[in-house]
Length: 197
Image (tube, rainbow, N blue to C red):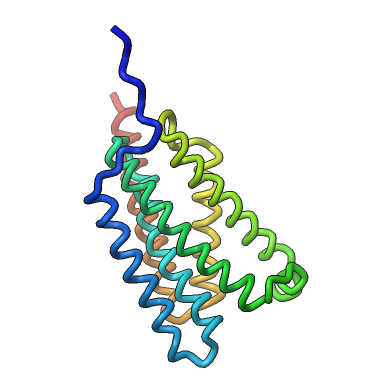
């Protein structure tokens, strides 16, 4: 008897979609509208949109690190990963078109080559990975390339929030690092338990 083919798209329930989209929409709306009172509207929106992205990335990263696998968890990861990316693209758009007037030269002069290159790499790689995750949901979801982009984004958010931005963003960066360490610890503990006789 032939096996049932895997669905071409991830199995995401309406409840899962609502549970991630509603907080995303509320937080992003609050981040963008809350910036209206700021002196520098564009720069404030650059920062607050990145905070929304960081929050959703923290969820996605912890789900990615946590031990075990299930279609349900993959769906939660994919939604958090996607909404984190969408908030990041809003952040990137305000930074590139608002702060730097759509000029690559301004980006390189303002951010210096290392940071500018890293930001563009994250943007294109993350977008490509999210698209691939939606189009090819079957098979291994924790490959080398995906692990590397998770680590690169983690480093980018941690350095940006704790070192560059400071202030309230520092607490978000520290919360991200703490949650990641707990998830990694759970993963290593389970692996150690599986290897012990």
